[in-house]
Image 1 (cartoon, rainbow, N blue to C red):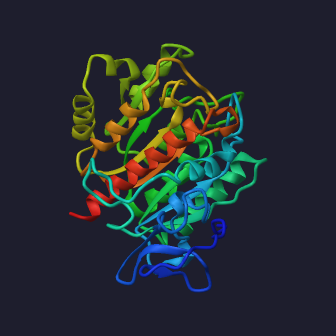
Image 2: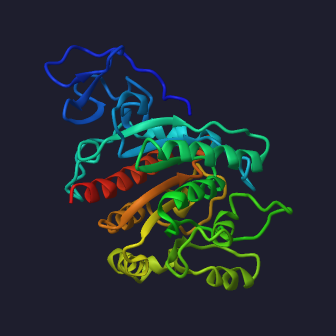
Length: 344
């Protein structure tokens, strides 16, 4: 894994911690988690290009949650470009702040969060890339308890689930997406961004009848798509269900379904309506608003999150960074969830 980008120059400050050999003042330190660069010392448009300007993994003694990029998009079936998603999400995270009022937690101070850089993989051979990603994920899990992935296309979820399975066994999957991603093949290819959860089911990585899709909408190939998906143990909360149901009702159903199992969150930004996330590869009309997504994630407080990904940000199609900002805030909600568990 490559380390995150370097740091800039900071003004002197009376407290905090200066990284040895570096020049950027971070909040926290000592017996407290090392946090982001202090925005009152270094402006948000300056400083390191890590997620939320957090320290790099190699700058901390321990790590509860590692944010890691996987710049891979060879599994896309329509518009490519998600290989540039990790950098875009990091750029969109610069305005994140230290206190999450909705959950009454400090995502960067109640736990040690660090940016682990990117897992490098070949852009040409999907099978080889999946092996490289899985190897990188296993290495990361030796250094951090919970990985949070910045994609990259949705293919990356499969090797992440394989690595998570070695530590936690079968997980309950909560999957936000416009699409089921349980198709069999595409042009004969078994590994694409539309197939990861069918493969995960076949490999016994998912807890049977404890998984859920949220935000599904749009045309399908045939009715058999839904039959197969149900056979794999998924329930579906469609995007249009949000018209007649509250966020609390939807989240309550999912919480009851997953119970106390370890949970993997997989968030494809195309779960959002293109008005809220134009920068993605397979946009579908009629999606969630960013508020609905963030509120649903927030309502999962208390679940045992063991890993997550936010994928399919393709910045070439974005406007004013609205997709990248939405994705960064989805990551922030995930960090809020892990912080809420850490502080109990």
